[in-house]
Image (cartoon, rainbow, N blue to C red):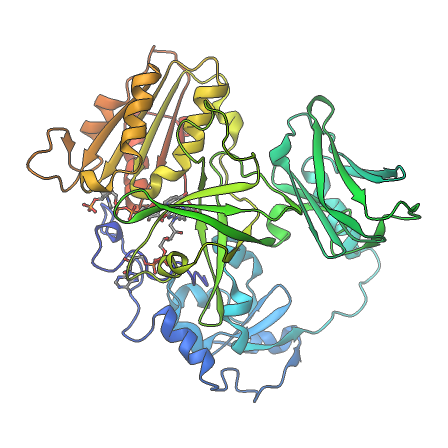
Length: 510
Ligand code: FAD
Ligand code: NAP
């Protein structure tokens, strides 16, 4: 539901729309695009029927608004009248109606918790849910509910802090061994300090308004074998701090990651280079007051204001080249995030992104995604099946595997594109295959010119069974798959039919 920004991509007539079984997405009527919705929200029309008033909504009241022409939905305590939005919803009216007259937060989170509904639906806001009366005896208050949830997952981290004349060190004890610099994301903005430690599907937050000023930059250290994270802040003045600061939202809480909301910081565009006729390498610079490393195989959300509404789309960071792990870094590490992004001239978001000038800002979220790097441990054969920009998650996975997995015997990429001109980083891929004998690449084109003498067509059982040869009968294998949704869905089915197990397949999806 509320799958707003992905709009009706791919287009109705696009190859990407039609899966083998003919599955198609809900077509929107003429005049019901995302841009049309934004226009309507800016028209000054009363979309709630409440003439600009905000009301307190009781559960009984919410339940009454459960019809298409009178449909209220609660998301995270706020109630929206979504009836005017029905025809604009790319997931269709029925999908929205699943939450009619009720709390749709869980349904919303299951589908696209990243969608910026606050901005998209702000003209539909009816009000807040009324506070419930005090809890009856025996029920838990909110703080204890959080603790109870956490007990079902990994055990809760804790934190402490200490100081010298010039430094304040915050120490987070994660009680986990598999912690590294990717596991903690730190942002310091004005006097608000936020450190989010990600442990499996949970987040632990240290979130305070600092009691004194600090300098812009700080350092983050991880003592991996004891799971300790140290964040060293530099005081602006050498005074003794009596306390770290005031607690802010979710401070010292250990909560399911899906309940934390996405956190964004503004990053500056520092370069933009053509890679193919329609795909560019964007380099964004993190602010000095942020520590963020996106783990291999994970994506982030980019957010831009478009005609006054904040629009969000997912993108998968890559390294600056396929050789970045093997050469001296030209630029300091960990400050730059690179993206390979295809610009769709008739798309909603990418033309705006392409319009940005060097020095302009884009908001970048915390990472998301279900690829776990430990899936690569002790791997012998890694097969990558990518179509178009579905190549992006493969970049860091490929770099990581070739650099860090000693058991690895071979990595094979089968890269599906329309024409030779569409192949991203073709010469780098060919050079890498020449340089590292473990790596092989095969290009498959769906609309080649008559000069092409390589493979052609679409993903098929015949192509896959020829390509996916294990180096031995018992070798540990992982097959990663990414591209247009129908490509990925068809590929998954073919792999199951070829008897690869679930544990041997990873598909990248939103
Ligand atoms: P859209 O507005 O979505 O349109 C895309 C195309 O569909 C255009 O050609 C448009 O003309 C056509 N279209 C849309 N609506 C209609 C319609 N009603 N009728 C006819 N045609 C229509 N992309 C990358 O380039 N790099 C990445 O690293 C990357 N990572 C991703 C990671 C994840 C997890 C996911 C889910 C997607 C990722 N994508 C990536 C895709 C990206 O999120 C966007 O979907 C993509 O950039 C298109 O956005 P857009 O708003 O510009 O285009
Ligand atoms: P594209 O150029 O349209 O397609 C790439 C190749 O895949 C072409 O050869 C195309 O053939 C083929 N193809 C398209 N649909 C197919 C289908 N149903 N079955 C078999 N082959 C199919 O691709 P793109 O524009 O770069 O789009 C890339 C897609 O990957 C987007 O949908 C994007 O959202 C997704 N993506 C996902 C992630 C993630 O992590 N989930 C990351 C990056 C990108 P024809 O065009 O000739 O039909």
